[in-house]
Image (cartoon, rainbow, N blue to C red; front, side, top):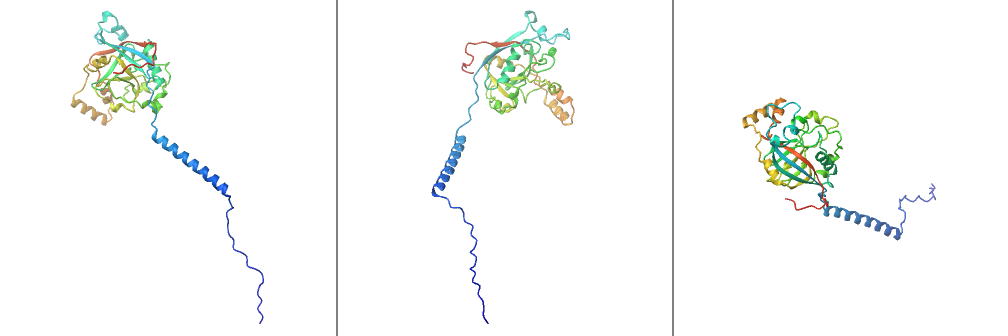
Length: 301
């Protein structure tokens, strides 16, 4: 038997080969990758090592506030049209001045907050701070002023012309701390305006607080906007802080907590009276102080 052998050669195995790259191409690519990696690493290290710039607390504006005590605000013969301007102004009213406080404002740090505050101090109409009450005093911490509501009750009137304050949604506006006495801050967490007023589409928050010391108020940090400091009259701030306030007994406070737990709306209404000063402390005058070099900051207290 004759066996036939195929004379056709077997096919070579398939081998996937990468295209040949020259030494110059490899060197160029390696250098580019190395440079990019080194640049990214350097930027990351720089970002970690360099601290963020501190807030600009240059004092751009100065305003004053005169505080007084009125003995006639709750007299029995007052009429519905009477307010602080009619009951407590003039020599015949017998108001006793407490003193003047000069505030330096950080216009570069929170420009809209400062602009609105200046407007409230300089426009002497029904919407200004003039002839409005210091509505609450928290001994050893701060006092509140600028609450909105009825003018005949010593509160700030409607505010139709103020610009909407977008500082309240800027995280950088909350960087400054309530670290000492004499810090001026826009009330956000501590605001006690009526809920009906806050629901108004034209609502503008203008209630402010001034820390009275002697220590810091860390519970106010990151929740309220610091926009200024007391330059003169820290003794006046201390005098206001020493005025006695209404504080319920521990038993009443416990009943109030229980009523709030049960959903009784009267609990919140009753709590609104807590920390009210037992004397009528009000802003008898306010305005802007013009200086030749407003950015020159004096030594702070």
